[in-house]
Image (cartoon, rainbow, N blue to C red; front, side, top):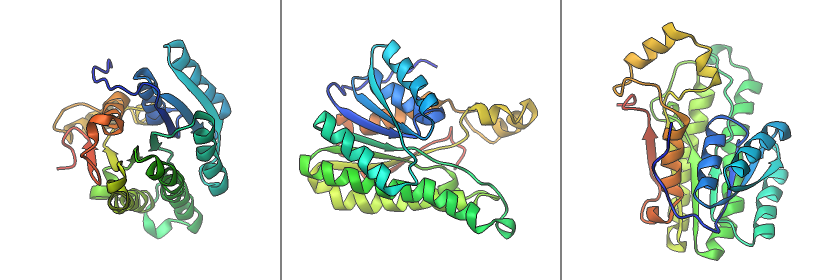
Length: 252
């Protein structure tokens, strides 16, 4: 899918977590294509290198930082290190996330804790580190990757939905703390997006999913990346505390 939306991010520095694959990779690629230097964070150094190589092959600049976002100290150090090295930090996209789907009655403590730690707590840690830097610079864009599961709920995803709803609440509150410092905080909430995981569901299941989507198609990673690009751009300076739902009309 060709992305026609553009933004002037020249000389800006961005951090994208979970950038080794899927939505994170799409977001990192789009930000770099619009001029930002992108620090790509994820656990897998090998997959990260693939993201960086694609960005560089397209003429962009990026670096790979192997980091487990559930390690609070490592995540904070990584974000602070990007700022120290580049002299600025303009954009943070908290995208890293996992699912451990199971009905609540059978969900273990570990399955709950893992999802909350990876999705919500890492978002808090990233926001805290970036906010300290951005408020001093009096400029910044924080975009947190939520989900329509955090808006409408989904059976078998109480842990995931709780983490994503928490991200929305965190973003709304933090936006009030930073608005007068030129820093915006928003969420993007994707619906059913094409990925390696969804492809394994098979054509029959995908056809049923499409019937529930008014747009009559499954979303593409670039659909989400375009929303992130807009909210991360200078053009979105008067938008903060909002959740942009990207689901083809499915949520309503």
